Image (tube, rainbow, N blue to C red; front, side, top):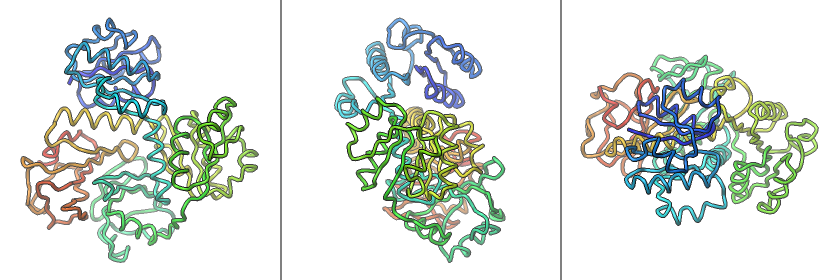
Amino acid sequence: MNIIVAGDGKVGLAITRLLSQEGHDIVAIDTKSQQLEDQLQRLDVMSVSGNCATMETLREANVEQSDILIAATSADETNLLCCLTARKMNPSLHTIARVRNPEYTEQLYMMREDFGLSLIINPEREAAQEIHRLLQFPGFLKRETFAKGRVEIVELKIEEKSLLDGVELCRLSHALGGHKILVCVLVRDGKACIPSSDTVFRAGDHIYVTAPVSTLTTLLKKLGVTQKKIKYAMLIGGGRVGYYLARYLIDAGVHVKIIENDPERCEHLAQIIPEASIILADGSSQDVLESEGVSDMDALVTLTGLDEQNVISSMYASARGVPNVVTKVNRMEISGMLEDLPVGGIVSPKELCSANVVQYVRAMDNQEGAAVTLHRIANGRAEALEFVIAPNSRCVGLPLKKIHLRSNILIACITHHGKTVVPDGNSSFEVGDTVIVVTSREAPIMQFNDIFV
């Protein structure tokens, strides 16, 4: 497909990289930043320098012959004008706009057709939703939801002396007292794979597990992970993610304290979130954290714009015994370095945003049989995709033991008439069922029929 990506920062670059890897023809509209130019050249994509909201620049980017335009600059207004102008020049164009300002949310959804928007992405709000989901289910490092909330894939780290340490995969159900779960992906020594029946788990492994939600609750109890409801949460950083997250937590009855070092931002937060305690201070200071009672918190979330500061503050909170820690990172390339550090769950706004865009593009490219949900897991080393079985889907009604899948493909869950099962060799899927597929991403799965040999 012919795709234009207008972006002047990390989100635009991340989207460009992912879509380029999937073989699309990309034209990137960028500012004259030499650093951005150098990175675009390494991706082997065409680039146009200029203002993406002008007809001249869009014409140079060949907007009339393009299929999709993604406006992901740092300015909401520029993104909206870019999409509006591009649709005037090419009425059949699909447009995706990055809009972050909370004040625009209501009117944008009301005026979506007027702006010609196919999809609105908000990395900060998506990150806040992800963090909120993690805090609702303490004990998991990541939590991805499928099948309208009936199925989840969660990340766990196997600790020393854990019930799972030294257990062979084929004996996992026995070790858990007969409860059936499926380990989709194993990350060990920085490498991700789909485990085989003779795989032996060991301390330090990160595993991605799927099962119905009720079974996952039992799993935590079996592993001795306490699920104390969060009542007090501290957020370090009062940016947009902090604002959205504070709203979610307060609505859930949580007492929220935000530490922010910008006086103007503190004053603004005090006006728009009067229910929260706003502290003007440096959240990376040990003295500040202690004086604000970090040890008494049920959860701490680090949300500043500096990855290094977030990591250090999260490690300190873990050392002080805070039971639930979440760390926001902007550079997902460093996430592999953090897997063995006590920083709790890791969330990346640009990663969540990029996954949503890739899902939309794949669905456009393969409208029948395309994934309805896509999550990148294991720090981007694997993907979990949700498909609804269509009449033209292959192998309908066949037992899984008679089906030949491509290498590094796993059918993780099947939902039939609202009931979700972790499949075995005798399981099958029917038209209308929801099927969760996990792949190690050696080649992208564009539609359901791609999983078969």
